Every structure is written in C-alpha cells, then in structure tokens.
Image 1 (cartoon, one colour):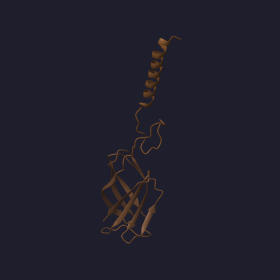
Image 2: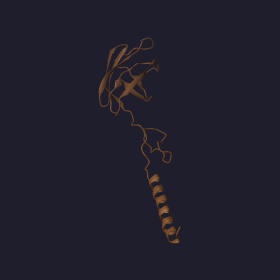
Image 3: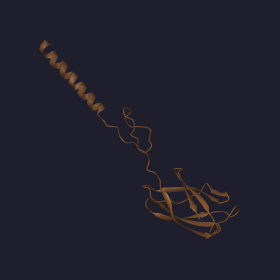
Image 4: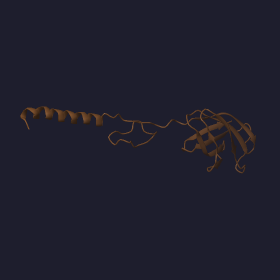
Length: 148
C-alpha cells in the first residue's frame, strides 16, 4: 500500500468509527411504562415516569336502610378504577369489612352510585352518626371518606 494513501485511509476509518459510535450512543432515554424499573435499551435507564395518581371522591351519599349506604363516587383520574374492597367504621371504632368485594369499575370523569352493605351485627347506619368508609382499588390504593 502506498504511504500517501495510509494517512487519509486511517482518518476515514477513524471518522467512520467515531460517527458510528455517535449514532449508537445518540439515542435519548425513553419514557418507560409507569413505575417500570426496566428499559428496552440497557445503556439508558428509564426516565422517572410515575403512574397517574388515582383520585376518587364522594359527591353525595344517602343512608337507605340501617344496613345500606349509597355513595355517589366520582373518578377524577385518567383511567378506570376497579373497586375491590371496603371497610366501614363507626364513631365507636367498630368495623365492618368486605375484603373480597366484586365492586364496580368507575370510569374516568364519571360519577356512579355504589352501595355499601353491612351485615348489621356490629352496628347499623343511623342518620346523624359518623362513619368512616375506606374503599380499596385494584391497585391497592385506599380512599377514605367520612360520612356524617
């Protein structure tokens, strides 16, 4: 090989290698699914991408019978919320639990009526008394409401 071509050839090879390296590492970190610890590219960790916070609130309520309370719940979040359990506590601290409730799914930006049933053995719903209702979603977030 000619001495005059080695210099430009070496520069070209180094330039191609440098350009290839720049291309390989120029990929920007990507947002991964919410709360995901893994990234599709092992060179770049996930950007912090928390899940949207669930937000349920009670718009109104009605004591229907001594064992039936209806809550009008609105989901102010961006995704549906499946309700899986509820706990009701009276002002004396007595509690009723329904931990395997096949509750409804509350669509985003929609209010629905939810019946909270208790067995009436430990306490009953009475107008003028105070109750704490805790509802658990399928993502195990808990929402607590005070009914007076």
